Length: 221
Image (cartoon, rainbow, N blue to C red; front, side, top):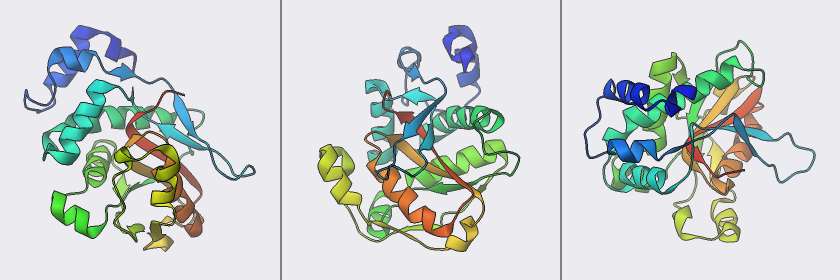
């Protein structure tokens, strides 16, 4: 991701992504904060292995605005750009020493409750997953995880309430599709990590080979 720091090359790369000017202006793109390496999703059980969190950016005001546009304003035009950077970050992770090896992973988007997906018109995590998959030649399986409750928006809650909100909110669907495989959970942002932890807890019921999380942004370590 070193090329992000080169303004000329960054603009040349972004120019090749068909996004409308109202997604982010060039100055706003330059204010996004690149994230190096992987973060860690600390597990609530001391003996459990921590889960890597891969993201191209740290979350800041510009990235939050872009994700809000995607989630709440019908901003599908943000998907190609975010997916490009997410694919680059995931490609680096898969090729690196902490990657899961040669077996190709399956991408599993964090599910929305059917009522919310119907209201929004799409699941932003699924859109991002398909964009990343198309760029890296990977598979997406949206049937592996399901959502059992139409939970409140996590952004409106404090950390303690976020954990309560999503506790037990996810269940395995076609869990056998993840058995023995490397699973990459896809979300837009990892902030407190409570949604990702709840999804990981459900995914573990399928006995995957490994689990990692990919998001557009993560909180600073």
